[in-house]
Image (tube, rainbow, N blue to C red):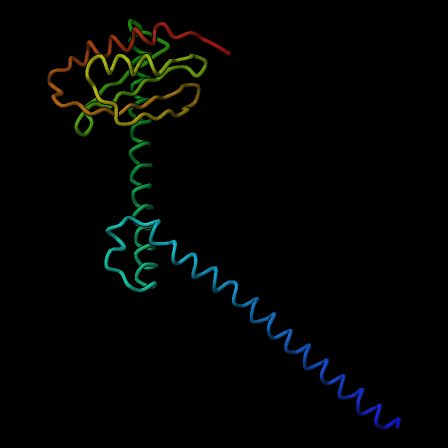
Length: 195
């Protein structure tokens, strides 16, 4: 009878090991299936992150991934162009600072450079960081002159703040740049120094 028990316990051990192997295979399959599910989900969301014209007519996932790569490269190029433009604006503003320092008849703590830009004007206002310039007052002056504001960005350069405002103007010849500059200087003159 002992031999029968041994055979039976060996059979049970084989069944347990076989069941254990099956469970391991199922767990392993589920573990490998999860990243594939995640990849499918990410690939199905990718077209919604791209401009519509890039994914129209694209049927395969490879086409969509290829378009995404091209679009990312395009955006990197645009970012590089914008960095170059930003650096040029900073250089122009710093040159304007040196000119303002040389001519002290204008507000010495502020410098305003106005130049043509695309379909409008680019206005760079440079003030000391300690000054509290209300950009809303600057915007009000521009709106009173019927100048449409397309973008505004502020940057710290050494001890100064540069506020770059890009505008759209229907007829640039109707704007007296010197008069506009004087109005903006008046706004900057009332700027107070704060903590």
